[in-house]
Length: 374
Ligand SMILES: *Cc1c(COP(=O)(O)O)cnc(C)c1O
Image 1: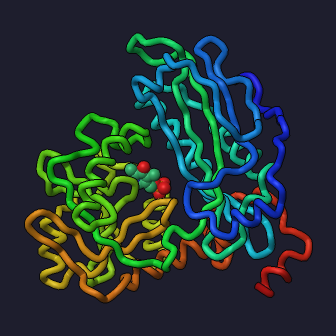
Image 2: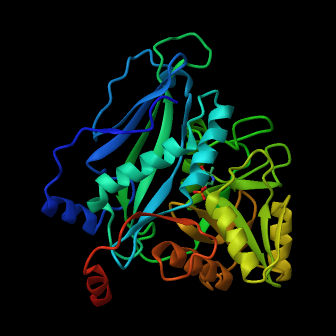
């Protein structure tokens, strides 16, 4: 590591009125802030050229290795504006650690965790005006790493680039939190033993797009992937981890079996559930168990979780020949209680007992009154 300090090149900032208009209803992943972070790695010089530069297209050689062999990894985390005007992020060091675990699997260089976290902090500070203050709004941060050596031979690239872009995001569900239907993918898989299922890499998402289309054709919003050998042991959704709730309040979730992502939302919810006195079982979980449990009344709720949507209640699991359905009862009670608690910690209305938040900017003078009046 040569230099932790970021150099800044100031962008032509979007005029405040135009920014505010975009922040009124940003949707998800459509709008980007004025700046971005870029750090270069070469085999010989290590990480260097840490910069915050104007957001915009990057130059890339058509022979750049990422374009041919998909050597890419990414992360997702959010910055939240609190009622007092201050800005916080949630467990950024966990994202840094996970990016490095993905890097090892994809034969990309590991990045110093301090450099990752410093990049997040720099970008959020410089583009702080882009952190929205509306209900359930946040600034979604997308750190990623690509191999960009110009070389068509098949081996790990000797040049890579780490970047962070930021996108203001509204509530994931425009009409409130509604239970979704998910499709059981039988023939199409996203991961297998020894593969890249536990890494957060673009390739896993590429493999999930066709099954996602099949799900949509069957009236479902998401796909459930299982272990491809049994088509019964549950892995996770395309981009979210899965939980079932037993009638006795026990939470069930697949263990980290090498095929699924070690979700930070998953990990946080396990802790919050235990804090509330719930038992949590991390183990092999099957579709059969889900099906029989719902029929017998012993499994009463299901939800998916991830940074983008926090918690998505699941109403039914559909496949070619059966459906497991919780009926019209709406999101489960524990599902919603955990959602309240986690978002409460993030937005500052619940105590941060575990020290998960890291503050990026100070409370704004006079902001508390403004927020209180909102
Ligand atoms: C990112 C991701 C998740 C959720 O992880 P969080 O850290 O909770 O955002 C779950 N599954 C997959 C496949 C993912 O890529």
